[in-house]
Image (cartoon, rainbow, N blue to C red; front, side, top):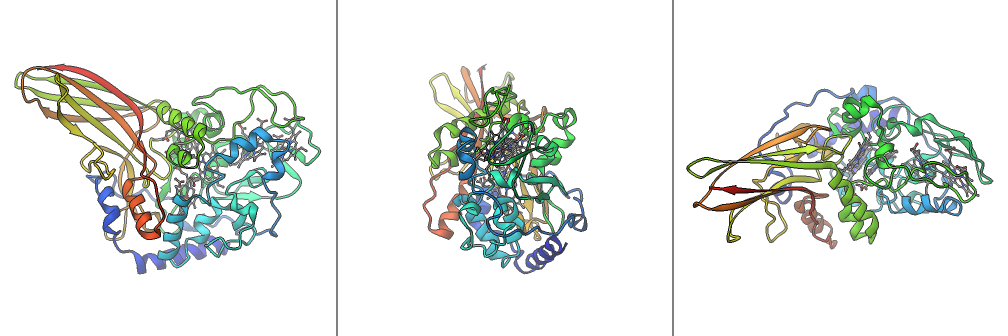
Length: 454
Ligand code: HEC
Ligand code: HEC
Ligand code: HEC
Ligand code: HEC
Ligand code: HEC
């Protein structure tokens, strides 16, 4: 009971103390988020409702090390070990944000972030301290097999409301298999989006701002209404719903389709840095499967080009971008060239410091802090400051008005670009920690070209 209420209160207190604007270095990239579109955030479930259950604590060692599952479930272990779930605690991009939150709130966020990013540590009393010094080997491996497969229910579909029952019974989508190592029980919740939504829905405990809204967004759109789940798209190795026949364990039964455990999302930049080339490529495929561009150019007698760009979300079961969209970035890059190949107009270009043109059209979300400043620091969020994302099966339109310099033929290219981080966030990590952070790499999600005559 006290868990959520307690840190909720602490966060309120810390916001009063630390709720100043964000440092210049990150506001640079973030201020690109031009007009404030969405003002106040519809009130989320009240903090009181958040207190659905007290934190569960088990003895250290209660959850099995994923290595102990690898012998029989080799392919699943391979795929999982390259998923972002396996790196959810240790990856340096997460650690930088977590440690900054820890510092700025004097530890109030430790047991907010921790239960999602290091659930086993949080449930075996190894967190805090925030530096991870009490973590055993199992805890360090992020969100692993035995955490997910000993879940018996979900008490609240946000802020990690999973109910754990660690032990010999492993719960999954079938229940008819036989294993020498453990018992097997059918679990309905593992086949449901709520199982994922309990973590993929983050609500600020002090003020109800939706920090991550993937689950609620899905629940209210066509995919949610038709019951096309997160598992349908994210537990298959390729974009879309593709069956993958096989066995989930050496001695297991032959099945029509085995759940893929790579949990592919947009993190190709991190995956490349970690040396997981195949997973990085899957991630790029996923990004490309999400969007399409359509362009309609119109030129008048004076050479005024009116370029209408439609961005369609054709493949994602939620808005694009989704998740930590306050860290990620999606934008339009537009170029107009004359017949000699000379650039006569550009928007959304990347400069020599790897920063995106601040006047580009951005699709992302940013918070508003207590001074009304835009911020990407989730713990300082007081509301939504900017929200422009493309809804599932929907589109967003941007119109560019460009003066063509002379009579002739022109080529218009538009590209929808994606980054896992803004370069300003990475610059800031380097500045604060001294760590070498490789420059972020852009991924082209979609493109469209068109010829124009004046
Ligand atoms: C000695 C081999 C062995 C080990 C070790 C092992 N398993 Fe299994 N497991 C199996 C077999 C065999 C099946 C049945 C597969 C089938 O027939 O589809 C199974 C099934 C499962 C299922 C599917 C349940 C269902 O009905 O949907 C889950 C989940 C599972 N194991 C989790 C784990 C976890 C977590 C670990 C490590 C803590 C682990 N297993 C270790 C052999 C093993
Ligand atoms: C983030 C939570 C999560 C993690 C981590 C995870 N699983 Fe799963 N696993 C699931 C879900 C959910 C399903 C059911 C998917 C479905 O119904 O499509 C599943 C399915 C399975 C199945 C049944 C596959 C089939 O299609 O018959 C086995 C076996 C299994 N997991 C073992 C493991 C092992 C071993 C690990 C670690 C190497 C692991 N899981 C890690 C969530 C997880
Ligand atoms: C215990 C909490 C938890 C559960 C349960 C969970 N996730 Fe995640 N998931 C996370 C966290 C935390 C990350 C981010 C890890 C990181 O990037 O550091 C993540 C990342 C992801 C990503 C992004 C990968 C990328 O490449 O960017 C996908 C996709 C994903 N999860 C899908 C799922 C699906 C589908 C389920 C349900 C079957 C699920 N998750 C269940 C916490 C969870
Ligand atoms: C119809 C297929 C589909 C469904 C259903 C779906 N997703 Fe996705 N998801 C995608 C595609 C395609 C992408 C890649 C585009 C992107 O990254 O924004 C993606 C991206 C993601 C990402 C990475 C976002 C980022 O850029 O960091 C996460 C996390 C995620 N999905 C979680 C979920 C969860 C949780 C659910 C269920 C509530 C879900 N997805 C349902 C297709 C789907
Ligand atoms: C309710 C679960 C939950 C809580 C609480 C939570 N996160 Fe996350 N976090 C996620 C999920 C899910 C993702 C993946 C979303 C995506 O891929 O876009 C994520 C992704 C991230 C990422 C991006 C990591 C990467 O590898 O790209 C950072 C950074 C992050 N979280 C920091 C934090 C911090 C700091 C806190 C505490 C103030 C926190 N999170 C609290 C669920 C949670």
